[in-house]
Image 1 (tube, rainbow, N blue to C red):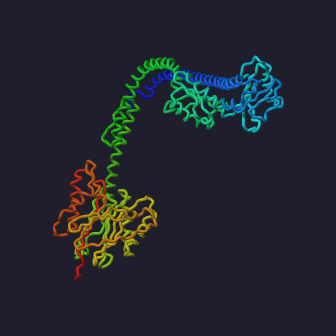
Image 2: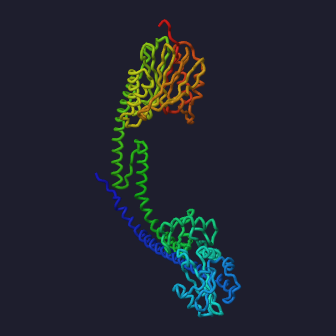
Image 3: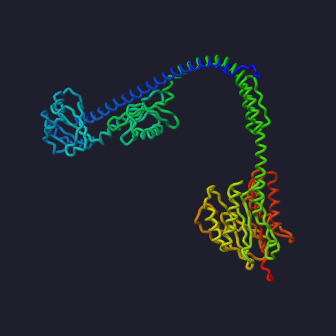
Amino acid sequence: MEKNLPSISSVLKKWLLIGTLAAFLFITACSLLILYFKSVSDTERLLRLTILDVSNVIQKTSKDALNDITGRIASAVRASDESVDLKELQSLFKVSEINIYDENGIIVRSTDERLVGYDIHDHEQFSEFLEKSDDAALPWGWTEHIGPNSDDSSIIYRYTGAVFMTGGFIQVGFDQEQFDFNNFLHIYNITDNRHVMDTGQVIIEDPDYGIISQNADYLKAELLNNELKAKYANGAETNTLQRTAINGVPLFWMYDTLEDYKIIAAVPVAEAMESLKSSMLLSIIMAFLVSLILNFGISYVVNRVVVKQVSETADKLAKITEGDLDTELSVRETREFDQISDSVNATVASLKELIVREAERNREELRYASDIQRAALPSLTETFTANPNFRLYADMNTAKEVGGDFFDFYMLDDHKLAFLVADVSGKGIPASLFMMTGKTTLRDCAEKSDNIGEILSSANHRLCERNDMLLFITAWMGILDLETGLVNFVNAGHNPPVLIRDGKPVFLKLKRGPILGYMDGIPYAAQTLQLQQGDVLYLYTDGVTEAANKDQELYGEKRLLNVLCEPVSGDGNVSEEICRKVTESVNAFVCDAPQSDDITMVCLKYLGMDKNH
């Protein structure tokens, strides 16, 4: 029977009230946007006016500086005074050229004797000098002209002139270097007292991006200069508002060029937007008051009807997601949530049943896999337990139902024993399958050759083929000649074994070769170890030394050596007793901490060749 419950849609209609707030916020946002663009526009205009003002001052200062030099030279010279050495004046005032013209525009004296007799009428570019020379009331430096050097047109001079009261005029030339030097001297302090707002900067650069003048701390100006020069060198337009950040502080900036100089003006964005604060504050207060009123009414309804049910549903679903499948959802204040509760509870019930069936099936399959894996490992048959030349024992304890460690031992002939321990990368089913492949491959290669280097090289080649999972194997494999006690072995990236001689254990940290299955075509070089009668060789995987307790402390090589130092009884299989002692020591160290890796070990005691065997 259908329950008479209100629909969630009828409740949520009240949320339309939020539209009022949304509209108000939209209008407020538009107002703030307009104010923002106005502030940006005002900032752009201010920076442009600042640059223009500095540019005008530079031009006036530059002209005044050259005019001052021209006036001082003219004061020292009289058109009729032949005693004044123009070259001395040229050297004193560091100018490129001094020419004295008579009232007809003819050079009568010059620092360059070749120019004497030169008629200004021959060059239209200097005609302005002649026109101005008729007005003796003009001040010093009444004109300035840029023109090429008479000998080399690629060299540009700046010429200034002054009229003599007695008639004629003087012309002084400055090359670019002299002009820049004079400018540098006179515009060095131009920006000292200039500010853009309160903390903005004004910088004048030379053609090489060096700072000539700045109004702020030099290091700050240099930082700004280094940041901006790459930008305008890469095409930033002049007289265009730009934005960047220096040391995390956003800046508005603009630059323009004046001849070879660059004038930069910058101001922090926060300061430029200062005028927004009062308007923004008013808008925020209004928005807050309106939102508060609307939220009070709407929140009450939503929290009472919708949020409460959604929160309760979410809490129950969170518990279910975390694995608590006994949780029952019972949210039934509205028709929609009542249906959701029934659907979720039915789904969880089906899921629980499915999980139980699947878990049982997985456990059964893993048991089969574990049995198959252990069956693939060699057992200590009479061939090995009754051999008078050695005592052998091997054990493996996997961290999961199936593991990636393995060991193997077998007789190659009547007097050669092959034995090994190996560790496959990874865990679980993939590692166990690769373990089976590795074990079978190594034994198959050993049956075709008794050269340990060739065995490992051939096995590596076969393991690299179609290794799509990119797994690899570390292994230590040796072949013991029972007649001589000589062990030919290869360490393929594995832990060093321990040699116990006269009761003293020591790690055999000899050369390690590359791991198996990682890179094809790698040769494996055999090494030799001469065992003496009574020597014990203990092989293991890193699950022994890297076993960790609940404090994440590792068992380590030192503890392993301490256990192997302890004497063992002479009764029974000494190799088995050593392995059991190590296992007990590791278990006592780990205590209740979960096993994180497979633990595998092989122990071989060499008794020497039985002469009667």
